[in-house]
Amino acid sequence: MIFSLSWKNIWRSKRRSLVVIGAIIIGVWALIFMIAFYNSFGAAFSKNAINYEYSHIQIHNPDYLIEPDIFNQIDDEEQIISLLNENPSVISYSGRRKVNGMIASSKTSIGVQIYGVDTRAESETTRLEEQLIDGTYFNKIKRNPVLISAKVADKLRVKVRSKIVITFQDMEGNITSASCRIEGIFDSKSPKINEGVIYLRKSDLNRLVGADGINEFAILLNNSEQIDEMKSTLTSVTANTVRSYKEVAPEFNLMEESSVVTKQLLTVVIMLALLFGIVNTMLMAVLERTKEIGMLRSVGMKKRSVFSMIMIETSLMGLLAGPIGLTFGYLTILWLGSTGLDLSAYSDALKEYGFDSVFYPQIKNSTYPILMSVVMFTAFSGAIYPAIKAIRLNPLEAIRKL
Amino acid sequence: MNVIEATQLVKTYNPDTIPVHAVNNVSLDIKKGEFTAIVGPSGSGKTTLLNMIGGLDTPTEGKVIVDGVEIDNLNQSELTDFRMHNIGFVFQSYNLIPVMTARENIEFIMLLQKIDKNARESRSEELMEKMGISETSKRRPSELSGGQQQRVAVARALASKPKFILADEPTANLDSQSTNSLLDIMAKMNEEENVTFVFSTHDQRVIDKAKRVITIVDGKVESDETK
Image 1 (spheres, each protein chain N blue to C red):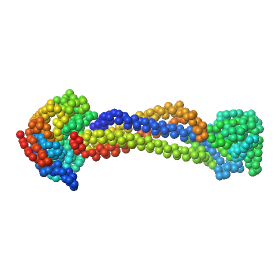
Image 2 (spheres, chains in turn red, purple):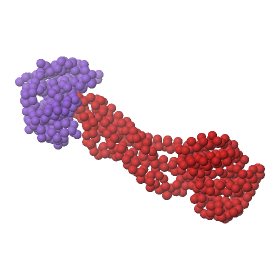
Image 3 (cartoon, helix red, strand yellow):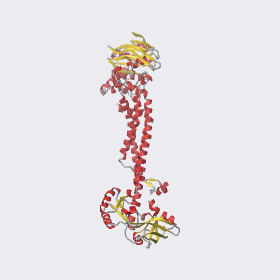
Image 4 (tube, helix red, strand yellow):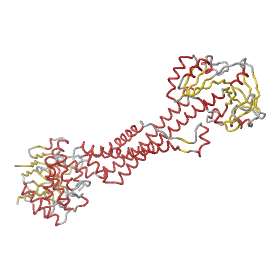
């Protein structure tokens, strides 16, 4: 009876109820969209960072992490390589010689990190070849070919086939210089690489520093879920430090944490707005029905029934609107998740931070029931004050208001 | 047998500042089957008296016994229950539930009393027939005339077979024809079913129809006449 009365009460003022229902639908939809959009930022950031910069796992000599010097090499390179070659989780890996140095053109010079790489392995691991925008990929210039970013090329005012000189410390501790020719210019999705990484063949760089060996392994796996298992496998065979990309770059954790906080804040803000809307509307509904509620109490309706009537009325609106909002949200994410959200208008700014210009909003299925619970909690909370107001009415009001 | 026994009822408003005695030392008994009108000018205290008899207001002094139960001793919840099972209310402005049909309004109190569906339906059909509103059973209050609404309200009050019915100026918003028709129905229910009616009114047509007229002036019983 209370349920039926509550349901009928919802439709006594259709416009007002539809405003509340509409507000909940829009609120839920907006929340889903914003969470999914925010998730797409995180996913795009991680994807680019893994695919173009860090890979899933990196291995370094523990001393290299304290002092990134050329001398701090990975000493059990062969053992690690044989493990990586056998492990099905590994898509590819790249062993790098890394040296800090200077690069100079006839115009100017800047500080860079010089990566000596196995060209095929590096391309498979960080897609270096596909990021070339000019020149070729280590197959035309025979002596000391080098790849530099478009940004570095701009700074040095050089182009493909220009000569540059790199200067760095060799294994003896001497300052060594070498003349190189630019074979290709790339435009990486990693701002850090664009800013100051140049690539030489590992054999060339090792010849120049005067020793074989590498300072870093970057390992690309099938997916991020395999990181923990792979880490423990590697840790069991090497004394070197094995770290996931999140450990290598603390900004991932910062981004994840800030993402969680931001999504929580978004939820709170939208639900607070809904809460006030619901309280306001239900309070109006109660005040408009003062006389009727007084009559109900006069003829024997108990306080708890009046309270339930208001609570059920509001909850029913939440129950009605919540799933509609969730469905709209789900369909929107389904659509945008496949077509992508094109933000090309902001591509320059996005690129600065390592993002593509197309985002694919995504949300875990487990988020939907949580959001439904949040909506119901909000509707329930919004009904409490009006319901208390209703039961505090004196039944005598019904007669006095004749 | 007395259905209502009110003894030395006093209702004082603003007792600490400027006391106003809305009801001042009123005692009255109402027997089963009476058709009583409480009359008096506006502000005489008749509605306050009715509220105290109906358990909607508590007296400052005195006591009200309904069917042997001293209702001032009941707590709020017990009093709500007591009203539901023992007292029928008819209000001046009908106070029907606008989202319910006439039939649903009539069955409402029976629903609160958890009376089963068959009993509810047969009782509401019986009352609608007696009240001459059978054809309006599926209409909502907004689709009914004032007279029809008040007949639905009386049917609602009668549906749960209360000990008595309190009607506060039930004809105040009705035209002559509707008033006569309603009074005829209530008089018929009084005679045929021995239903006890207590009205507050200053409508001469109701006073003429009443078997007992209690006149209240300035919160006191000025006269009590049985015809």
